[in-house]
Length: 113
Length: 115
Image 1 (tube, rainbow over the protein chains, first blue to last red):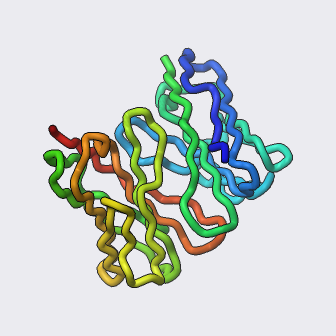
Image 2 (image 1 turned 30 degrees about the vertical axis):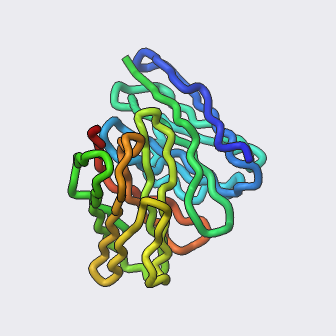
């Protein structure tokens, strides 16, 4: 079974630029999550999708972050414009209806200069 | 809201020894799941072990076991026969017992295994 795929693995941008991250969950997993992990901290949920609907985006900075999950499969997270404090690892995870753990992708490390 | 607290920012252990990582959580839920995740420097988050709150028996996975104290809201991870490959950041995480519950993470504990 293929795992959660993310791209790119690394991204360096200047502040005020835009950036987009892509995630492909495990096949059949209806729930998809984007987490932000600042260096030395635990991951923080940004947004949760159930199929292509948003379940929880209470901690998503909506003035600059947006996310979509077209057709309930792949998802894209965008930051526009980026700030220095957005430097972090962005983790995508998916889970199925069956109770249990999440499956995480390798993450995208974003550096904003 | 649920909170997860890991009070040990860093721990170290000698190879082949045993180490215990601590975790406490706060919730009003009765049905939930607890997890320990390992995150090596490569960054991939790996599930180590999980515990269902309704189960009294502590979960065990090879060298990894938990001490789940529901009344005390405590969930510690014991690693026996520590190996160099166990060096990583370890996160305790909580999930409500609904089908689509999110994971709430603690701050993490950096574990270093010394040869």
